[in-house]
Figure 1 (tube, rainbow, N blue to C red):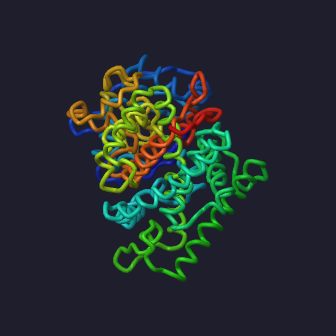
Figure 2 (cartoon, one colour; figure 1 turned 135 degrees about the vertical axis):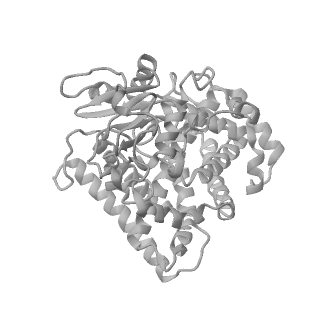
Figure 3 (cartoon, rainbow, N blue to C red; figure 1 turned 90 degrees about the horizontal axis):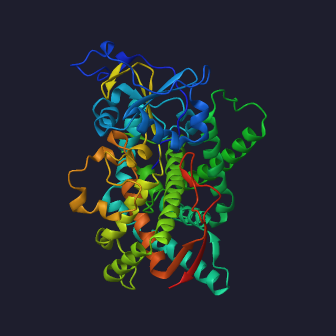
Length: 476
């Protein structure tokens, strides 16, 4: 459900190890120029400007230099691509020529060698082992669990309103709700007793991963700095919890219908995941399912607060499809307009705002030479706000995701879950959960986000709202 932030480059393996590596067969890259872009400072290039304002910097690069542009961050070259055909080449048709850049080392320190951070044959094996956990029939059984968790949130919110305490931080509420959902769907347990420490611990290690990725000069983890101390303490708390749960499951290995049971049962011949591999995959799913969905839900309720007509249409759809009954798996495909709204919010506020790949060999993108070692930045933010790809991209318009208006749209113009072989394995899980949360809470409550102007998106590992998202809830 997420990729990572971006910053610096890594040592490259030999391109000969990658059978599809290399430029387009009909083009000699040596005859082509490199992409245009700003010169920047002598030593740091454009790194300082980008770090101060990443999202405006991406927009400015696209507007001033076109769909393919280059910036330098210190000694490293970054090429930003905003043409769907080039995105497809990087993520799909020539994906073996591109590996994850060094900035993913921060996430690797935090999450281990799970699906987000692993590469090559190991990644392919782990993806194959993990895929059955997200098959339709398995996801179907998790909807009731999601509904139970949202019902508990509804009870909390009703109690708050009854006590005259309807003001809350919507971002924190969504983090709490998604933590409960991921605890039950992943582990089959209530994490309320753990959540006072586990949720913040995950946020701590992800924040450290982001700062690690941003740093041109990295502080080793063994150095006794306050930041390293906080990271090690949070990681130890998480590891102890996850390994304890895995050990309990090893002693009682029956299938409980949750994702951990499915991962433990998965096999490739006689091979199964080790405890450490389980830990890495579990933590990856935990962090992604908790952080990215919570952030996306916060932005969704912000937009529904600003566009009450969209909220009214969702309530009408929920009354027609669900009524006063519990939401079931079979109902979710019929919540079409609800899905359009969620998709449009993820266009405007993509949880993963940038995806990095590093070229193993020279390539050609947008008619320009991409030298070996270049970081290619595919930015969902930049793609989703491109006026060449979207009509009036600044406007909130859920109808653009209707079947009629979606017909013919290039699939690589919209990347809320990435694309290609490494598309987010939990994309259907995320959409199911998002529909359940929006439909149930909007059926029962009015949510008024109090910030004026609205919160600014802060690009870290995900697009978090700066300063939280204060809101007031009331029953409807």
